[in-house]
Image: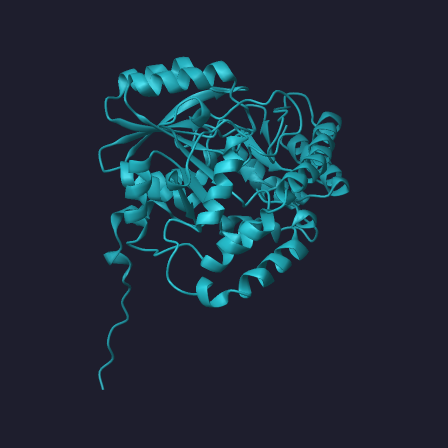
Length: 399
């Protein structure tokens, strides 16, 4: 019997898959294995100590009391009581919305993907901060759009550079921004820049996608309202991943009614609805003021870890290294001396027992090759001290 030649289907893959390459998690895993006791500064996730497990278990049990209803089809836009709760929650941030202007999704990343499907087509351009969330870059790349990176300073996106980009590119469809405790830089865009960004978006008739996963996690500094509170045409993304648990995969978008209607129709092509059990679990978890108290506990906890990291950096970093001092969120952005490449640093530091994300991963133009992102949220204070000491040793080895 003749043998059929083994063949791969990879030559039949869509061209858009070329943007993905090898998963970053493959690199992370291999670097963790270089040391017997690595300190991992990569997680943009809540601390395990803060996961409200007993509260979630009680909430889930409450949901199963009405399992017949919860296990059927439905809730394609999201569980209505949860959407109504979100209306009140975002109102505390100055956002005026109604339940029909909200769609609940499998994390805010799905919301971003659905909104991108609604707005983007090949030939369009998207303006992003440089650096920005690498997951957003991966989403935008799949639509074959041009990605225009706008430079940032310690306060976030520069409005002069944004205006230059809008004036120079007539194909810009939207601006994607993380103005509050930005991932990866940790910056908090000042109010006057937020107002100017909204003005420019209206002037050039482009959409604004405001990603706000960390807005509830503020430890110091001035509270600045979201851009969505300044302009009701902004498409706003929120999530329960950072304040409850990422594994629940519950996020949402708040947007004008026509945007939500089209996102819902788009979503139904691949995902009839979010998990009805999980949406109800989240709803019962956040009731009776629980989330307000839990967020305060989180802020106190993360403030201590942030302060521990900043103190360790002050103590251990050699001359020529600088870093951000975030008022909230999970991240500190480190700028290395110009002769030290972040990918090289990634390799060397792993041998010293410290693992992080290189800055180039967050840069569509691959120019942030002298920066790294550190997360303090999941690392105990004594381990932060160990990891930063190792990082300092690794940097000195390259000087």
